Every structure is written in structure tokens, then in C-alpha cells.
Length: 430
Ligand SMILES: Cc1ncc(COP(=O)(O)O)c(C=O)c1O
Image (cartoon, rainbow, N blue to C red; front, side):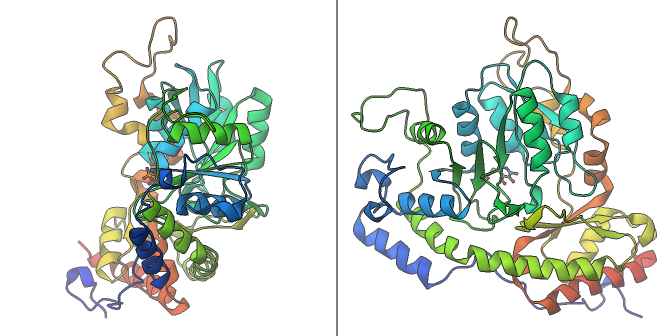
């Protein structure tokens, strides 16, 4: 007999989980060095746009970091920006998105994947996800293509690479650009090729919860020098390499990172490989434990997934095996048992947010703009085309955070023990 912790019983676990972010002497030293140098932004070392300069000459922490991150992700060029929302906007502008162009995005993703499209004047079109990976389903992409489609943004959701062979083939057939939203996929790879190098460009986030972080930040990766130079210009107020600082050639924002962030990110990058290995080992162990429990199915790992970053560990919950206990209550009960990094994820698919339903995009009827885009879109209608996203949000998807997977094997057993206890006792949760 073991009363559930949510009803006052003894929790399965009281020990804390690993703290996030992981910080060491290397961050402290690097931050102090920037502080004392008085060179707090990249302009202190010149104008930037050192994309092709000799690495040994790079002094700026941001310049050094973006080179190292890009290389680790199979790319010749990396361009940092303020966050992973700005990087998506910049990527869409750099590929030449025109007002009214349609961009296919998954229905199960963070707001930025779709809001970036709107911010640059495009129209997000939602596609459903695969039932076993929660990644954008290539079959649903094909159905969503119209004469106005210009790009696809596959999101390597939770850190598992999308079906990139199929997606790139569709893109090639219809002449579409592929921008990888790799905000969750630091260090992940597909058939041994790194995420961020699988489309025209990759967009990563360094926001506080991400697998490496400077509190905020983002980077674009690419092997296309012309695209990389556009990124730099769009991050730096529309300037051009070798031109006077007061010459601005394109409309652009200021999305620069500080030298403090560059310094922290260099230190964080040094840990990425070993942390990714550890997360993968623990996730594989938890997969084994959970797949023995009726009503719990970890998401599938595709054979093409040669490295999974496990920004999120996701499982599919079936309330029928828990005497009808709703997902939300299951998550609360798990947290009470000491599994603190658990969440029920998105409450609805993205298109059900008020911004989309009420089309509060600009002060006007957008996306209907006579002469540019005549297609009337009712975002609520995507529900009929996205049953997998609907089910994931309503009853099925449960997330565990990446930092828990920096713990040990024994800690994974606590997660499974908490699930088993709730299953045993669930009739009494009320
Ligand atoms: C899938 C996805 N794309 C883009 C972003 C945007 O990143 P940022 O928060 O750095 O703007 C996030 C952030 O959480 C994300 O989860």
C-alpha cells in the first residue's frame, strides 16, 4: 500500500534533479575576461562580417563562437543573433520571402516558428505531425502546397531530426526553400549529418531552457556564403562587408549578441558533446523501462536519428491504462512523486491561439491583401487537418525536460517507479 504523494503519501523521490544551466569555472573566467577587457560588443573588434577570415585572427568571442558552433554542426558559416525568433525572421528574409508567400510549418511547435513567417509578411500554413515522432509529417506537407508556397520550416521537435530526405525531396520537386528550426536540436544528427546543415540553413536558440544557453541568443548555420553574408547584414542594421559603417543597404534590425554571451556560449559548447551522449544514454534506459508499462509509449526513435539531443523526452500517455486519469492529473501526480521536470506541453495546437483565431497580425485584414494574397484563411479550420496535433495536446503528449537526463541511470528508475505507482494507485486519485 503506498498512498500517492499528491494525496499526502511519501514521494518516490525527494532528491533534487541536476540544476540547469550547468555553469563552471570556464564561464566565470570567460565572463571576467570580457568584463575587464572593456570590449563588450563585437564592434570593439571592427565591423564584424569576418565570415571568411582566418580563425586565428578572430578576437571577438561572438565571432569565435559562431565559427566553432557552425563547424560542429557541419557548416562553414554561423551567424549569431539575439534569439531563435530573430534567426527565423532573418532566415526568411534572406531566402527572399515576398509578402503573401506561404510557408508550411508544423501545428505542434512554439509560436516563433509561425510568428516569424507573419512578421516578415508571409502566411503560415499548418501541417500535422507524425503520430510516432511528433515531427512535421512529409505527407501532410505535400497536401498543403499551393502555387504560393515558398518554403518549409521543419522543426526537429524535442531534438529528433525530421524526415529530412523526404522533406528535401518535396522541396526540390516544388522549388521550395527548407529552413530547419533546430531550436531544440543542438548536437543532433540525421544519418550522421548534423541538424543545421540539412536544409538551406538552420536556426538554433540559446534561450535559458535550451541544451546550451547564454540566457538568450540564437544562431543561423549554413554552407551558402551568399546566405551567410545576408544574415550578417540583417543582424547588423543592413550594413555590408568593407563598406563605411553609415551605409545601410537593406532594411534590417539590430540583433547582435554581446561579447558576454559569446564568452558563455564558447564555454557551453565545450560541454555539448558529452552532455548529449549522457542524455542519449539515459533516454535509451528510460525507453526500456517505460515501454514495459501499459499505456506509456515513448516516441519512436527513427533509424536515421544518429544523435538525438533530447531537449525534450516525450512520451505518449493513454489514460485508459490509468483508470481514466486525465493527462493533466497524471502530470501533477508525477510532479508530486518528485519528477519535477515534467509537463503536459502545449495545451492546444498553435493555430488555436487567439492571435490566429482572431487574426490579430496587423491592423488590417491580413493575410487577405487584394492584389497580393486573396486566400481567406480560417485558422480554426486546421483542426480537421491536424488530428495528431490535436490528440497530442489534449490527451497524449507528456514532456520531460532535458536537464533531468543529465542525472544517472538510477534516476531514470525513479521516473519509471513513479509511473508504476500512479498506475497502481490511480483509481484513488479522485
Ligand atoms: C521550436 C522553437 N523554435 C523557435 C524558438 C524561439 O527561440 P527563442 O526563444 O530564442 O526566441 C523556440 C524557443 O523556445 C522553439 O522552441
